[in-house]
Amino acid sequence: MQLTNQKRLAAKILKCGENRVWINPDYIDEVASSVQADDIREFIEEGLIRAKAVKGTSRVRARTRQEQRRKGRQKGQGKRMGTANARNPRKNRWMRTIRSQRRALKDLREADEITPSQYRRYYLKAKGGSYRSIAHMRSQMTMEGVQLKEGDN
Image (tube, rainbow, N blue to C red):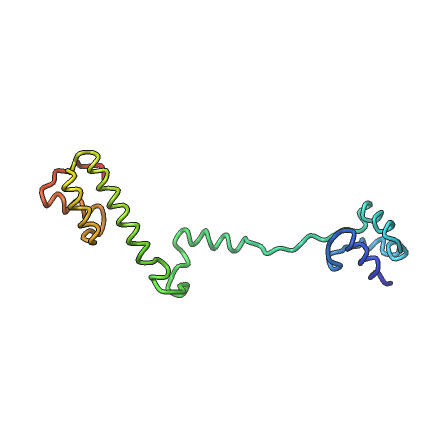
């Protein structure tokens, strides 16, 4: 029993590939006897012929892996491609630290905890890479005799 012509017509009507055309196995004889596109259209309306769903790629495994990585798993030596600098560039690390230090300095200046001249001095030191972090910068300031309020960083 040949259904190639019927499948071709159905594919054209359903606007899909011939491989996606599904014909109800109980009504194959009826479908095989139909020759015209109108007959095929009727079978489609009755539900005897339909297009199979497009198979996609499941994201379940990818999602679970991503969830685990967020927790810090699956990041060991064997999973790493690329250098440490490629994974977390030096420039990005620098930008993160310097921006936070500059923000902290700005807050200290606006709160009148440091004078504009002190702000300029510590700004330039931060630019030169003297401080590892905001905490390090604040400790250096207190060592140099700057009175900072405790609590707010």
